[in-house]
Length: 246
Ligand code: NAP
Image (cartoon, rainbow, N blue to C red):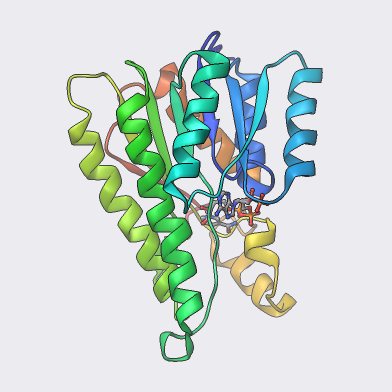
């Protein structure tokens, strides 16, 4: 297993779902982990306690990523506790689906605020602060590629994240910092499962040639690869982790 002694990874939206699996996996690989959450304080605390019980180091940090001041405070807290940040995993996100013609302002604005602006705010802090040799890993989605009806606003935020990934990778020249995105397909978390009829879940489950939903751990494996020594030469790329769906 890769070990990452003395490296600090900040994972946004780590209280549940994919982010929780990423935080757990990076801690198992030896990273000290900052577990960011917005509202799920108990879940974040339980996750951090589990990491500590397993011999790792973890800190919880509440911050709504759509608030740039809160993002700054979160990085300050990580720096004060552990001396700096080596890896940002930009995972926090929401998904609200509706045909664009039926989308209200809140559906559009909330996704842009959290997914797109939130990711830009955390990437900006990371660009300023991540230590030499560090990694910035953004969560996109395979909807960029699939482009199904109902996903216009969500897909637009993720396409924006992919664009920023490519640009920031170039802006990090000279600092030995890589910037990549992981783009999951349908993955069994609240974000994917909530509000969908079972028939739609079944149909999406069969879509990938591997004929199952992704598990949060599948995505954590891809992120751990990019965060660790084996991923050092991967830069400015989008890695689709989706069982072959697109
Ligand atoms: P999830 O189970 O709904 O969990 C979302 C996480 O994001 C939670 O920890 C939540 O924290 C946090 N969060 C939400 N709004 C936040 C905010 N304003 N500030 C900080 N944290 C916030 O979602 P998931 O499925 O794990 O998704 C994780 C990422 O993968 C997202 O970027 C999503 O777009 C992407 N993705 C998911 C799938 C999928 O099928 N599941 C597919 C492609 C891409 P609280 O609980 O504290 O609110």
